[in-house]
Length: 288
Image (cartoon, rainbow, N blue to C red; front, side):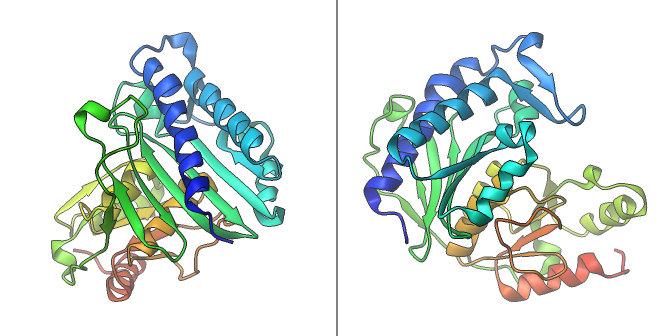
């Protein structure tokens, strides 16, 4: 079952409202008391994360009462919540603010993610940028799109006048010309040293949260990404969008992605050959 247009528009509207009514009014307005630490000094949650997830959850429950919901902050309270992704007929996965560290420190590289999984298969994905009030989205089998908003439309919850742009990749075959997204500092020990050296082969490497990262790759600004951890709210929407644009997403050891995956490293590339070449490079003992 794919989502029809009215359902897609309803979900986009809910996320946009949360972004414009909760996330943006708190951006660069947080006090120290509004930010909490979760698992580490870089794993943060703010009052805006909690409020926007609560808002989105309530709105979806009202609109689609038969759907299950898995939100990042709900999982932080009860890790077994992720079980719904595999068992529910329809499950919505929410990341209310992806890139909370950036958000809490006043950096605009963050976003909001929503994915709809039907019987274990991601059918719809949304990557929303509340700063610019635009979004990248995909419905399974229907391609990936970037919906722009004009300056006079931003933040007003208007339906954009511009038609969405279809997204598709033209793969760069030369690894030495690639730009990528990866967090070398997230690794430890010898692997951190090895990947730092391997990353130096490429023209440019940035470290971005999942929502901005998948948006940047989908629009062709970067060629690949390598992510060191697997969380469903980080990848379910982005992988669908990336593959609908013609790209390849697998774990570095070659497994096809499923939204129930909680372990592994995700490698996204523009083509099968590019993915194979990158996987060989990162898995090999060779150095620059």
